[in-house]
Image 1 (tube, one colour):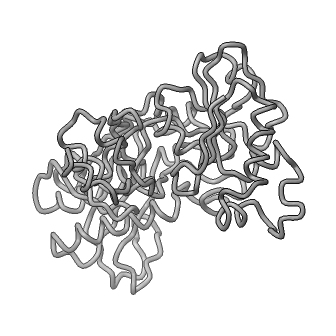
Image 2: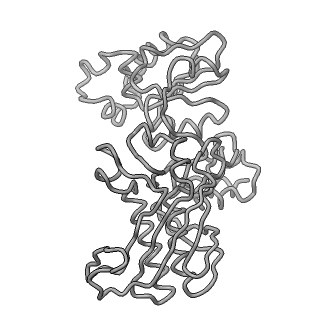
Image 3: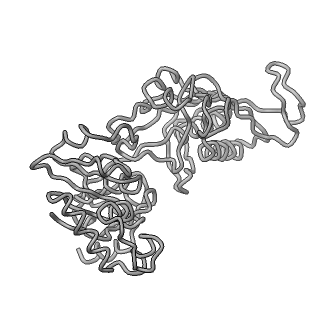
Amino acid sequence: MEKKASETREIQDPISGMAIPTEWVEKAKDPKVLEKVKSGLWALLSDGALLRRGFTTGTTAAAACKGAVISLNGPVDRVTVLTPAGIRVSVPVEGRDGICSAVKIGGDHESDVTAGAVMEARAEPLEIEMEERVDTGEAIEPEENIKLVEGPGIGRIGSAGLCAPLGKPAISRFARDEISKAIEEGMAETGLAAVRVELEVKDGERIAAQTMNPKVGVVGGISILGSTGFVEPWNEHLGKSRGAEILEPDRVVVTTGRVGLKYSRFLFPGHKVVLLGNQLDRLRFREGQDSVLCGLPALILKWGMPEVLEGTGYGTVAEMVEKEPDHSRIKEAIRKVGERLPQTRIVLLNRDGSILKDEEP
């Protein structure tokens, strides 16, 4: 056990960036826990449980596209993809004669509506000296060696401020780069100088109706996304995280932002996690509820004590916490938060997910 503890002092979850406490590893019953965490495919929780991550639509699309290119030289049933997180993963595919499909893996995510979505890519060699393809009218720049065509089932941007310009396919920059890299690897493996790849999502428009896309302004299909290439094994959609959602469960964690939302899943695996944002004045728990307020210090401390910075010489709570984490004003503010929530555990986090303060009721 000593060796296990010493090996894990510096271990970090490569996807979330969270430093993994030694005691979490010691609670894990799986002898391959370190290997699994380092692979990025598994998330380790505070109770020692391991949850499997899924793959993003971006990783799935990249696998289908790479498989399509490789299958021009022969059948393929698995490809590797370099994710935006820098971790290479192996993805099962079905590819033959330039056509390849990949099924989106949801992992242990309980409500990933895109899990099981089939992405199909069709690849064909491209003559880069052609100025224009007669059959499609697609303009080809002489220096281009990859032509990615977004087919049916991929949404289009209908509102400003999303992952791409208005009218363009709903493919984020990270996902597009991941797909391009995968196609380049397929070209290197097959010796092709240039390719045209058409990507589509089977039943994409139907699947999209179950996502947030119609509400945010993405029309006609799903989005191809993923800043890491992995899907966390829980639902990170913010939704209307309010009132009844907080009062309903017996064990609940209320968070003030995405950092708290992200790490509370690891820290409190048996609790329902609800994002309340800066609406702490609306926070209510019921009698006997196992409740936790968790997040970065600023919002929580200022809610408990608006004048927390007065007379300290600090311009922000973050600065004070970094330089004097045991400052008397911090202690006083936590005490006042506790007075407002006398039955609630107060947990303040650092940005890396480590616990700064943990006050029991």
